Amino acid sequence: MAHCEQVPTAAPTVDDVLSRMRALDAALPAGDGLAVFNRVYLAVTEAVDRHIDGGRFADPGAATALDVRFAERYLAAVDAAAEDRRPPACWRPLFQFRRHPGVRPLQFALAGINAHIGHDLALAVVDTCRTLGCEPADLEDEFDRVGDLLVSLEERVRDELMPGPDLLQIADPLTHLLGSWSLERAREAAWAAARALWALRRLPDVAGEFTEGLDAAVGFAGRMLLTPLRD
Image 1: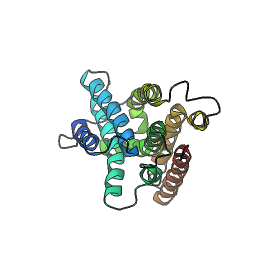
Image 2: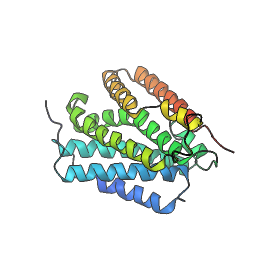
Image 3: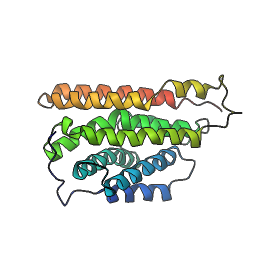
């Protein structure tokens, strides 16, 4: 498999996006739904950074580029909301419900993961291919490794944010919400969407319609994940 070209030295780094996320973590109230997701994503990005530094990516330049382009999509949504601009539809439910007392922390975490994997990851693959002058197939190893870290993190999130066994019974609505969404399925769909968008890159109108449809569908799923479960 051909490797991508190296990232230009002036390109943003993983440390740059980590600094932004750490600043958000320090500034946001702990119970804010955005803060819940940001803590989760900060842990993922720190793990990716350790893997890059530890030589666990065959192409560290491509891994860095993908990780940074991925994070920039999330940070752009944060900036849009802070500046009273409309973030992508996939992120709007999290910003709208971030302070709702009836939404549990696990819901906030999964809604953010849904938006970021379901929508941003596919676009980040295309962004990275354009930046590095490569094909999606050249990024597949990096995509899979980052995806493996995300799956392991989802397990940790569920362990840390899941209500205790005495609170989470089969009749609890949260049980049904958790059963309706899978990070592994979202990851597979993101790769398929990235390949489709790359194939459509010379048909900008069609690619735009595809992207809008993806954004809306992921936003709808996010709204369901944030269904208030208590008053």
